[in-house]
Length: 196
Image 1 (cartoon, one colour):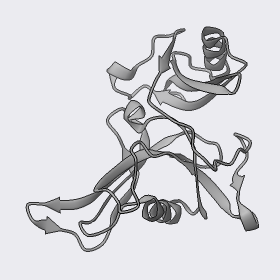
Image 2 (spheres, one colour):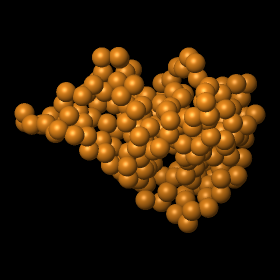
Image 3 (cartoon, helix red, strand yellow):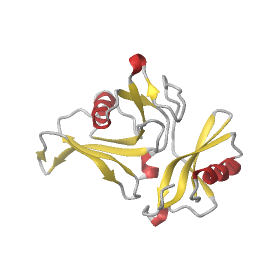
């Protein structure tokens, strides 16, 4: 347990459908039990710590579970693997899990955000954008692998030249290089706006 833990984001599952809960409990097992009882769930797992330096607006009430909701839809071709084991793709490649909070067309977007996790660990947030202010741009990407967002959740942020194409392929390659994985499996997961 981390000393500053004040709660957990807990994933529950009932009849194959999952939901997420913000639970005010210091211990992961207690948080999972509270969420499981509240949701009348078959399974519950604490997936991300909520730390005391989070914005007070996101601080959970001790002993209570509040459902975290966001719009989601099933992802085709998602690979099912154990929550605690690394995802291994063809040829033994290590894969991370990634979500996209917006629809990312092949011709790209100017900014994108979502969540990622490695080896079934805590969900973290990424925010990537093309840099163009007052007619100026940058020549090479600037990646901050130790970004901390306003809620206190960690992740990665990055600025890219204005002419770079930010599509799923480019984003996947950038984040794979930053975290030393061979690629990503796109899954349905938490909304970065709810976490950050």
